[in-house]
Structure formats: structure tokens, C-alpha cells
Length: 351
Ligand SMILES: *Cc1c(COP(=O)(O)O)cnc(C)c1O
Image (cartoon, rainbow, N blue to C red; front, side):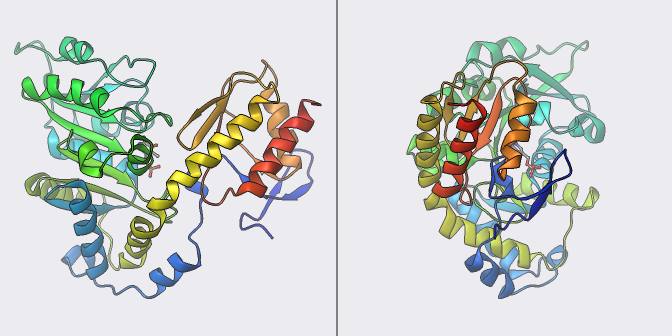
């Protein structure tokens, strides 16, 4: 029995899902994590009384080399609170046009914070070139928004950006008096691939957001880390947007467990993604690209819907992105599951 239950196909058949590669957010808390959650000591976190939340916040802040941490419900909320804490109305955030904060967060910072998002082109590796930051920073002129913050991201659609690629734009921003926020939803995938210490990457930014609910397997939550005053401000904004949680230690315990037990397993996810990509390359399915725990390929035009349906029929769930399909490897997609995906793709192409 798979943990993912059944899925109803377009033709009405019901199939047991054996492999779900839509995202690493589908990972389920394992027995050890559930036990840690069940045993969590809790209190009312809005009063600061939840020892497990406090421990998670302190643990993440320490790993990031920052003064304070704030446990929040999602990566989107974490980024939003960071932007609200950094910027006033009428100020501006420079952000890569393909980054989540610009492309996938419903313009929350503009809607709720009155700030403008200035999207800039990224390079093919996902980084923002330093001269692009220089060109985007506005001079002090009453016609313009006030440039206040640079948002970086790592990993970017699976690509792990080098420390140099992070530091170069951050330096330009800092020299002009801007602050830097890092959306590190998959921060630990990045440092696993870069084989660097957490603080080497977190050190490029003032505030860092890290998701616990993706490849790390926790059911809920992200932590925003940064200087005390900014985190205190973010805590007030968290209350304002209705994000204050009470006995949240039940959830935070899953996050602590993830930091301790799941971070070391990400290297194995990346290795399995590498083997999976190698298997797909033998099938001639069209440009296969592996980046950390993600594998991308671009099937022939018109193939995507048919492929999604065919794989669903053998119990393999993938996203329907077009023209390039993203397959995300994670702790619950073991070798047996990935073999099933490869054989499903092979049978679709009649190879
Ligand atoms: C997933 C993701 C987020 C947002 O996380 P949610 O918990 O889904 O809100 C932010 N940034 C990046 C780069 C992400 O991949």
C-alpha cells in the first residue's frame, strides 16, 4: 500500500499512487517524526510559551548564524514577513523575475505592504548579475521608488548557485545601502550541493527563509532567521496577517526532527536524481537536465498530457508543466518508485 492513496484517472479508473514526483512537498512525516511530534512539549506560542517552537527558532537561527528565528506557517508567509520587516510603503524590492517572491507569491508584498517589486533578468544559472543590480538601484530622486532590498534565492528551480554568484550581487546591494534577503526554501539542498557550511551561504544575506516542509519531510512550516530587531518586527506582522499559532510545538517538533535527521539524507536524494536522470537519458525523451533533487525534460510538443495520463495509469504522478516537465526526487520516492517512473516513461515512448 502506498502512503499516497488512490487517484481517479480521466477515464474514471481508480489507481493506487506508487510514486509522486510532482514536488518534494508531498513527502510525508515518517514514524520517527510522528513520534517526535506526538511527544512534543507545547505551550501557547503567541505568549512565547511553547518550548518546542522556541527551540526550533533558536536552533535554526544558530545554524544560520543569525540572532533570532521566527517559526511561520509557510515559505510564502516567511518571505512576506521578511519583506514587510525590511521595507516601508513606497520602497522597492529588487528580485529575480523567475524567483518565487516575484513569480509565485500573489504579489503579497505589494498588496499588503505597499511596496513595489522590481523584477530583473536572471542569468542562465539562475543568478542575478552584479551589474544588473547596479542598474536596477534607483538614484535618490522624488520620481522614483526608494530601492531598499535585494532578494536572492537558492536553489533556483533546483539550481544550486555558487557562493560567488550570491556574494557578487549582494555586495553591490550592500554598498548602495540596501539590505539582502535570501529565499532559501531549499537552503539545505543548496549547501548539500555546494558542500559548504550553512553560514557561508546564509552569511550573504541579512535575513534567510528556510522551508521545513519540502525535501526535509516536515508537514508544515518555515523559519525566518535574522537580526533581533527585524525578527521582532516580522513577529508583529505575523500576528497582523493572522499567522500567530498556539500549541504549534506539535508542528515545530517535526521541523526539529527534520533538521536533525533529514538534512543528512538530502545528498542521497541528489544521487538518486542523478541516477534517475541517467536512466531517462537512455530513453531519448528530450533534453534531460538534473539540478540537485530535480530532473527536467522537454518532451515533443503535444506529448505532455498523454504522458501525464499514461504515467497516472501505472501509478506515477507527475506535474503537467509544459513544455518542460519537472520531476522532483525526494525521500519518499525510493529506487522502486523511480524505476516504476522510468519504465512508465519507457513504455509511453515504446522504447
Ligand atoms: C516552495 C517555495 C516557497 C514557498 O513555500 P510555501 O511553503 O509553498 O509557501 C518560496 N520560495 C521558493 C523558492 C520555493 O520553492
